[in-house]
Amino acid sequence: MADHFSKLLIENIPHLRRYARSLTRDQHQSDDLVQDCLDRALSRMHQWQSNTNLRAWLFTIMHNLHVSNLRGRRYSTTWDSLEQSETADQKQTGQEGMIQIRDLERALGKLSDDQREILMLVCVEGMRYEEVAQVLNIATGTVMSRLHRARETLRQILHGEEPAKLRRIK
View 1 (cartoon, rainbow, N blue to C red):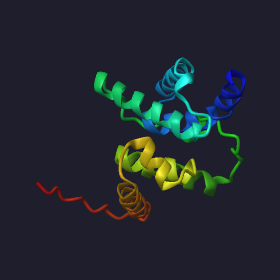
View 2: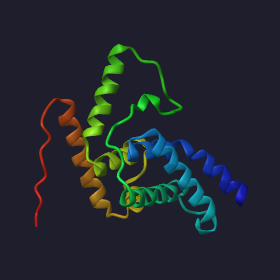
View 3: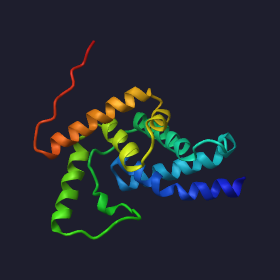
View 4: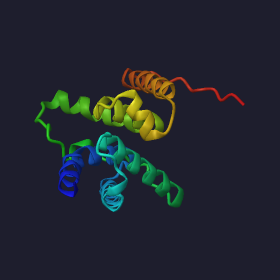
C-alpha cells in the first residue's frame, strides 16, 4: 500500500505545485507549501482511503495548510510570472502569445483569492464542482456562483472594463 500511495503522491506533485503557486503567488512560499503538504500527507497516509480521490484529499490538506499559514503570517501580494513555474506543457509562443500570457497573469493577480482559487481548481486542474466543494469545504452551489463571478470578473479585466463590486448584505 505504501508503494502505491507513494507512486500516486509523486504523480500529483505537478498539480500541487501549480495549485500552491496560485494560492501563494510566490515561488518560494509555494515550494514550502508543497513540501508541507507532502509531509502532512505522508504522516497521515493511514487516513487516506484507497477508494477515494487522492488529488482532492491532497488539495484539501494544502488548502487547510494555506489557511493556517495566512493566519500565522502575511504573504506578499506580488504575482510571480507563471512562465517561471514548471509545467509539462510549456511551449514557446510568439510575441503576441507572450503579451496575452502577461495580460492574463496580471488579470489573475487582480482577482480575489477566492476567485483565483476556484478558477485554478476548476479550469486549470480540471476538478469537478463537487471535488472543489469538498476541498474548500463549501457548498457546490457556492463553487458554481464563485466560478461564475470569477469568470465574469476576469472577462471584464481582460476587456479593460472596471469589474463590478459586490455589495455586502448585513
